Amino acid sequence: MTESEFLAGYDPAAYERPALAVDLVLLGIRAGRLAALLLRRSRQPQAGLWALPGGFVGIAETLDAAAERVLREKAGIGRARLEQLYTFGAVDRDPRMRIVSVAYLGLLPEAAFAEALAGGAGLAAATLVVPWAGEAGGPVSAGTEDGAPLPLAFDHADILALAVKRLRGKLDYTDVGFALLPEHFTLRQLQDVHAAIRGAPLNKSAFRRRMRDRGWIAPTGAREAGTAFRPAELFRFDRSGQF
Image (cartoon, rainbow, N blue to C red; front, top):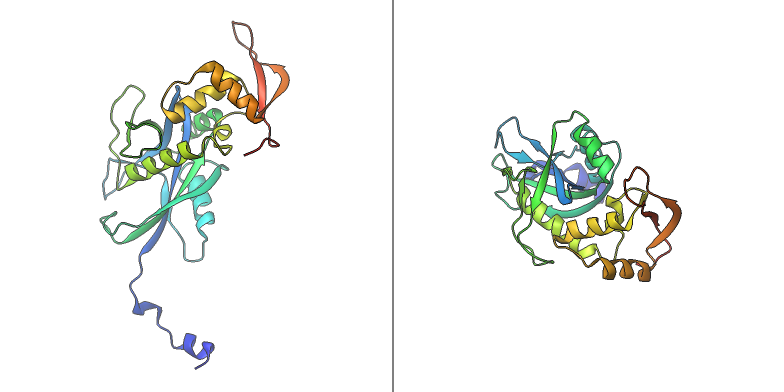
């Protein structure tokens, strides 16, 4: 039998197939804490709970194209740095049917995070509560800035937990921390980002020395504006630094 003959008689309906979806973990820094953009579900199942922006993948759509579409349509964001995080495929993760979801991680500078909140898509900023240190892993919960809990839908607490673990793991050897900063930033802002991701304060002198020694930052020759104190020097990410 030739391949053409085999395909002519092949029945795709002979095997059950799961539905395929994408979910976006869009993270930023809010009030010095790591935060995620969530949507409140208006329809069943799990109406009233908070969920990551997500959607089903079209039959003629690539995963990346689906993620970019969800970014535009559900989050109201035209462009963001997205990378695949993990595939979540527990049999009972969704009560409707068997749904496998490919999670994407997106990192937003503070201005882009605020713009998304004000964009009219109904997004809310959820502060992430991470009760474990380093890359130990474990449960993560979400809440408002004043501490009120935001109950999460489906397995989205697990997705957020893995996103935090991955982000912490990549902080020291990739440029992920700079993705949460504007193009020009102060050393204080850079330290605040690292502290927010790690969930712990950092020694100022040691942190700044480490950043300079690694060659990841370069001075711009400018200083920040609009401050009542002595304006701090502005830096930029140096792509020639070694990662």
